[in-house]
Length: 194
Length: 112
Image 1: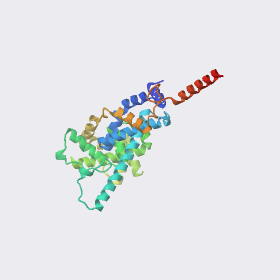
Image 2: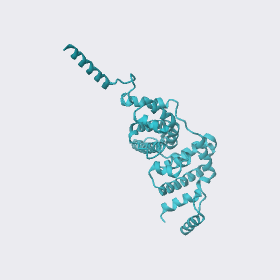
Image 3: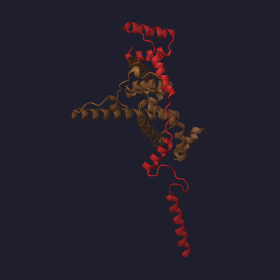
Image 4: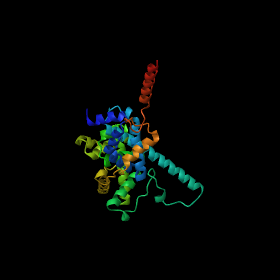
């Protein structure tokens, strides 16, 4: 029996030590994915926690037809997409309420949430190292949740198209066409601001 | 060919997955539509360096992450989620009940 299968068997028996081992094995990959998809550390941590809680709660439904890491990524991507939609809705509601009471508009940096389009920083102020990272992250944050997931899985996590198809449940052609459009959109945003 | 199909082909075109004949077909289709062949987005210098920084700057989970998750599970499930550990954090009520019944039966039998 492989180490992963043994771990899965222990997980199904609700062995707490196995859960901890699983978290130690995958926490950085899951957190990195949630952070790149949400662009915010607090939200990323919260969603990453929910991912592991979901995995623990639904481990009996994992039938080992795919790799465990693929299933884990699927759970993580779905949680991120839901959070992005939730944050976008909340942002819309907050904005409507602000419009209604006709207060002065706050700056974008005060109101931006991970689910809403970001204003990309000025190029002359953000060019190197961490700033370039932030610029790219901001550009990714402007994509909708579907395109964002594909760019992060392919271009940041470096997964194959086959793996992405398994994770997202999308056909090969759809993954490729969306990824192509997402990359064009990203390049456009970057070229406009660099 | 639909727009989606063409975009999928363009993805493969830029990734270098197509044969020369397939590449020529994509170029012909774009020419028919009057669209220029753009350079691959991922070969763009800004795009590449932006991605490189994201890949390098791995965001590790906070050190307390594992304890935070298990603590949350304990809290939400009121300690019922994880399996029993012998004399651990949960009382094995089933075993206690069976042992209690056996003791009661033994006492009752000895009195008769």
